[in-house]
Image (cartoon, rainbow, N blue to C red; front, side):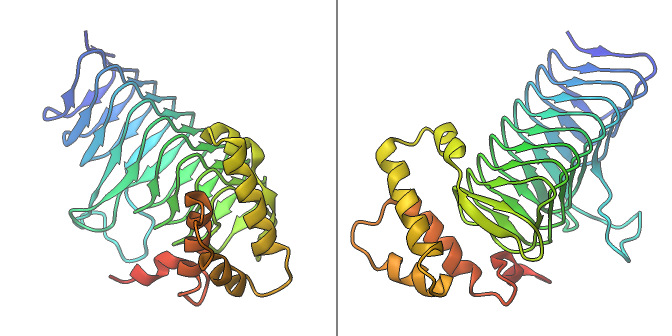
Length: 269
């Protein structure tokens, strides 16, 4: 059964699947699709051109699919939308902005936890099983890979890629790409502090796989040579482990751009 509180405003063209619950004072635009079992608590605003999957939970005062914060973008400008997968938990006051590009989307995957006050800017891609603690802030065009974990008040510059199963400490200011499986802290520049053992465990990696990542970390970050030089040397080794290859590939790709952010390649497309 679909439950819509009498005080909620739901557009006539909105598509609500079985088991959707919409709480008091919500505003749901007409161009919205909401999957089965999704719960939307009080005072949530969901904008146009948004597709939401199944069994998500939006806590009070979220604003989802709002207008991007871009100077010169008029309120009536044509823009893109937002795709949200399944089983995501969005706590109070989470904000996510839609794409600035008509026909394209900000993308959120599955099984993510966004705690109080998290902001995800326009045209970001957040994959699966990520955790963003209170007031984590993502600028536009960022990519967060599977299993990433951010402590409170961490922030990311535009066009940054944050590697799978890596961890950002609280208050980190991340202005360049971070390879997978690592721990990063500090800001401008952030520093690689070690290997994220807990993240590797969460990823289900075997002891042998984890040991190869620890060895790669030493070769990349503890030899004293330039990081790119170390990455290219490691890339030439025979039988490179797939997880180590993911680390090396990100370092090499990031080096192609002046600021160490591979996605800068697509700025102004």
